[in-house]
Length: 260
Image (cartoon, rainbow, N blue to C red; front, side, top):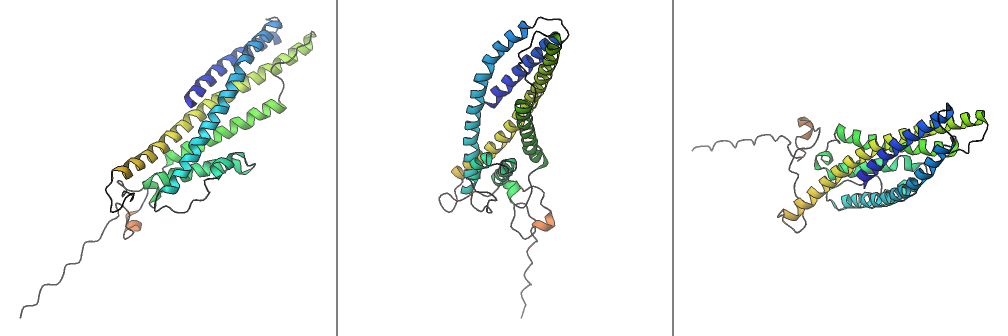
């Protein structure tokens, strides 16, 4: 669904740039007024299904986000979560905290799903770039889109017959069309980043499930030991902690038997 949304956003970029060109032609007297208005009527047929598709995408994403957060509560040996699983839904709708809680929960889920990050290490830099890059682009596009909608000029104005008003309205509509095209470009980037985040977290959790299903532990459901070393653990710090890959000192040889 995110991939389809990115393709639709690419179509929106093309159409908005084309519409900006029509308004530019009006502003300079190269095109009659009625043509862009007819084009706007055609473009309006696109916005309604796009809005419903985005609502459906939001619902599916929230289901995945909540389930990914609930999954990490079942992992044994995990430290206490910074935020409860209820915030995986409520954190998106509560004012002010919705600017901070979603990426914080995402990082919690990533860290708990990856044994290398859990055992005394940190999330790799690429993971931090993915999560924060997605979140910054998402917040930026949402904020700018709301600002343009409620405080910017109309991009489908009723142009009067006076030339001065027609030029002013057409230039304002052209500017809004270009800004909205830029918003869709950033949305495409955000979609690519969140696809990478979802794919990586889902892969980590699927590996955990597969490992638990095949490991013959001392008791049913016992966790499998990590099969790879943690991130960024210094050998000296890991010594004696029991972490995978930690160096162990050689055993002290017993003294030779005393003769006689």
